[in-house]
Image (cartoon, rainbow, N blue to C red):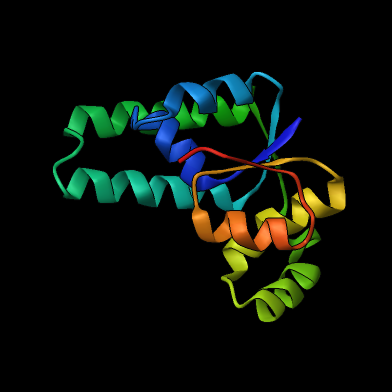
Length: 134
């Protein structure tokens, strides 16, 4: 089981460089805080607005995301990690969003899968195992 963040899920859904590595890592099973759905949907919307996805492609990606949440990704409530995540956000000068993924990985003793360099550095500074896919 791994904690997967929005940057890696977006890489996978948009078939960006490295998406195959994300897919291989997801085979272990994934968990994420509930914010991941909104973050990924926002990223897909941005890709659509920038012309990187057609309207049909945008809809297909959203449907795939919904299926993944039901089948491949265990979603946990962010509130369970919020207090410690806010402390980490303040300490590490990162967003609360990023800190939620990091705190989930830290408290669950699971590796973190990310394509976000800032999150990589923050998590590594706490001794968390990070799988970084550039």
